[in-house]
Length: 254
Image 1: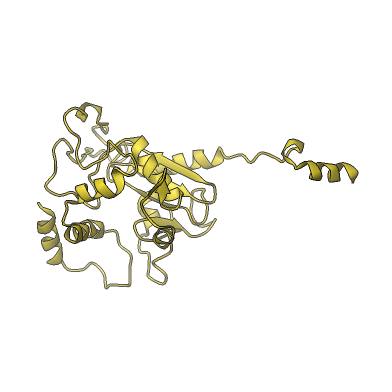
Image 2 (image 1 turned 90 degrees about the vertical axis):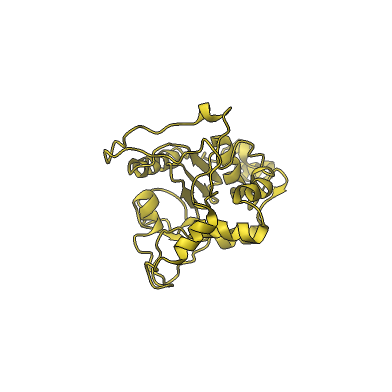
């Protein structure tokens, strides 16, 4: 269906929850994509290409893969090893009727990393300013407050509590509670086909996982990668060579 047809169908569906009471993952980002189209007068893919992909040098990202690139498209296992159910990916071999705001883009790990690094840099990369620092701070803040998280974004992506939701990202609230390592203030999200990224401003860390695992097993591997990354962080002890000359003199004099 077209974006307009999708929004028309959504408008006829009853709400799952009373507004302002429970967080529930939904098609809201698809609706937001349609808002962008209506405000800009462009297809969502064209708008993102002009405002995000091209400025960041994400030359192989879009909503479909042309014939000359389709042979490089990663494939999922035929069957999910956890559920035993067939894995089904979105067909990106031709331009879709709907550039979905919630799922369906395709790209490379290098492109995705540039996008995530832009976020880690406060909204800019290599001279291209995509977001203001204050906008990004708003997006990565707690927007649930007293609203019940329901199953919660952390349960959805990682199978663990300890995360709230901002504007498009789940955000870690504290050092504890979450069953995976990380830092307060880190933010992340994942893709339908199994992709996953996170940004940890405290550790100055950006990670991108480009797995094609659309089934339940993806949750296990997201946790595993997170554990492997954080256990590999080793803080080097201060050495005499790292201490300013004046400070070295003071240490010798003591």
